[in-house]
Amino acid sequence: MNRRLFLGGFLPSQLWSASPIRLSRPDGLPEYVDVKQYRATVLLFLSNICPISNAYQDRIHALAKHFAGQPVRLLLINSNDNESAAETLRYANDVKFSVPFFKDWRNTVADRFGVTLTPEVVILDSNGASRYHGAIDDARNAARVKVEAVKLAVADLLANRPVSVKPIRAFGCAIKKVS
Image (cartoon, rainbow, N blue to C red; front, side, top):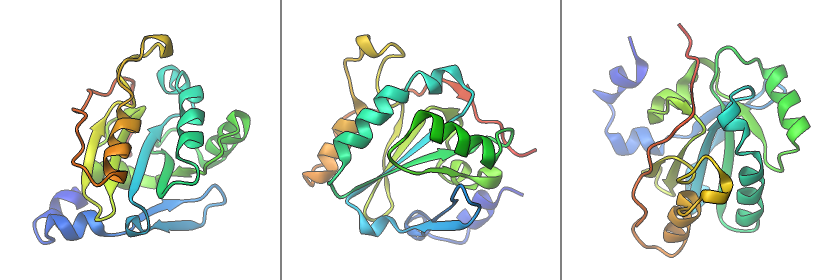
């Protein structure tokens, strides 16, 4: 049975969304992220091998640089069952991400937030409520981007405004889930 559906019947959605997010560091040790410590937590689901996800490397570097020093936590997450922790670590080292790249074993975090593609993003407020869920921006080609959804949504959260950017449908490769 899907744990999210099962627990969803017993836990109020506020409790479910506010609970810490459990991820695995590249060394295999667990890390718990408490969203209450940040004004915004950006969950960015990526793949080591998806060409669309990989086309976003420069934009992800730019997001990390943009949010540096702000009360924002950027979490890069690999939920693909067919991509090992060692491969994910090697990929992160090759790409030289300035923020950690975590492994989501058994897709629990992806399932919890309804994420099915890479790249796909969920932005949480400090209460753990999802305020944006969709694409990073509105174009596969960086030169054609008109709406930088992640930057706009986080700017609204930091200014204590409702998120004004409408969700943009994510596009990319399907997350390879645990069968």
